[in-house]
Amino acid sequence: MVSRAGQRSREDGRHWLPSQGVDPAPLAELNAECLGLLATRAAESSPGEPAPPLLVALRDSWACLSTQAVRRLSAAPFSLFDAGFSSAPRWLELRTCGVHDQSQRVEPAYFEVAAARSITRRMLVYGWHLARSRPRAACLVFGATISAIESLAACSLTALEAAADRNADRLRPRWAHQTAFWQALLSASSVGADTRLHELLLGGIQRLAAETLAAHAP
Image 1 (cartoon, rainbow, N blue to C red):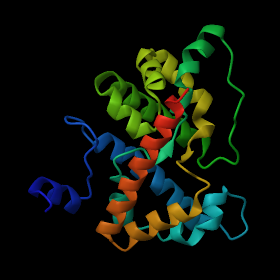
Image 2 (image 1 turned 90 degrees about the vertical axis):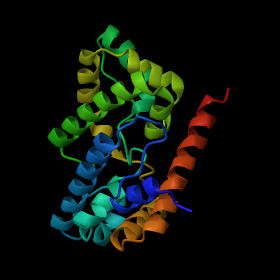
Image 3 (image 1 turned 180 degrees about the vertical axis):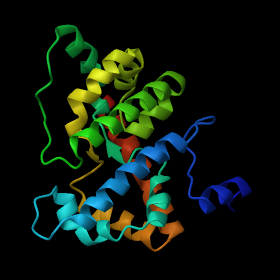
Image 4 (image 1 turned 90 degrees about the horizontal axis):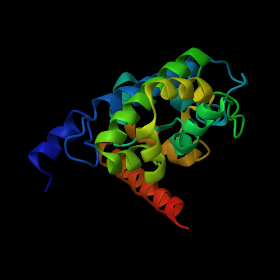
């Protein structure tokens, strides 16, 4: 039986994060902004126009993503987009050495540079606050190891600003190469299939937990 609180959460499209006292609103806002930008890009692009593989493969699904679908999907209890949190242990080192990280650049970009920097900056600041207040929840929300979250918590705001500038071009959908998974997410959110969407998002949390545990393995 679903509790009244759980029922209200399902009805208003908000899934509480895996930790008491964590406000899901900032995460939902970031997820919604990214989803909306990709939907707009897909709707305004022409067939054959260069774009990241996930947008090319699911162009119609992205283009038809409604405001209601964005609201439902943005309530995911984890970040649907990856801003490179797993690289957090290197950010302080890079700042100290005064160098830029040139490894693992991702192409093509999913977002325009200005938008990517703005979103990445806010995502890092939100992650920084969560890392300091609810580190274990932060691990699941961002799919990062505890060591990465601890490094994020140790960053200064100046270091976060620099990291956002360096890593903005890395902002991308989580599991961007798993087209079938994203097709299922977009479809479930678009038809208002709350049960199916809930199952998919729960599966996402389980996947993040498994990946984090694997990353902790020696």
